Image (cartoon, rainbow, N blue to C red; front, side, top):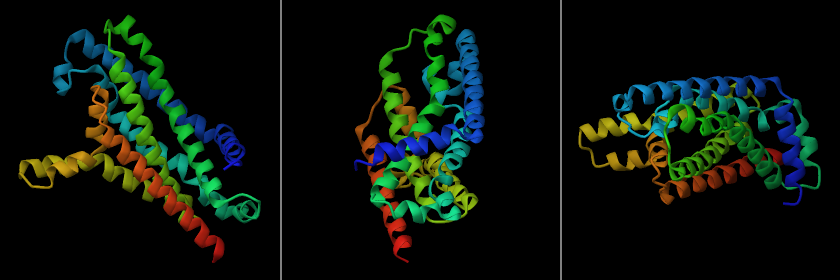
Length: 253
């Protein structure tokens, strides 16, 4: 794994030199600004109860439609090119002939995707110090740390899913669409839970456990359930394993 740092720097540099990455970052900066001022408005009017969430952090992230829509667009956009572009341009063959393992290539690309994901979250974190001064809300750091860890593990899982689909096709658009569909199902599974709970189905709790919206809501409330973290990490490892197998299979075929 000694080649991972070099490959990671290569991939991250390709992100930072891409105009698409700056456009996505600009969009997230705008979303964070809108979310922050909307949160200030709710705090000033004492209307947080309207959303059903009394914790401002829940409104800032978990209850933000624009945040989740942004992720649904950004994750496929930053992962679709990781391996699909290498295969389309033919550079994957030359990369695989180097004295590096497939695992090193996959892990380095995954880490670069996770790093870009964290960069996209920076605008949201940037506004938090102003919450006390402008919003007059002395929030506890516990929920912030819990939310940060939860978003990190969730992002690792999301990027690993996108990387798998990028390895499965030469077409970046196809990879982006499949990634979007899977993330959409993970995020919107909360609707399936609400239906199951209404019908009092036995599988309702299982769906709720897998609901990303529910998980992030719990994280932002300061409830750091290690089961959610382990689920994210386990799925990340599983998807990376599948990605390595796909790349090896295409390498031998």
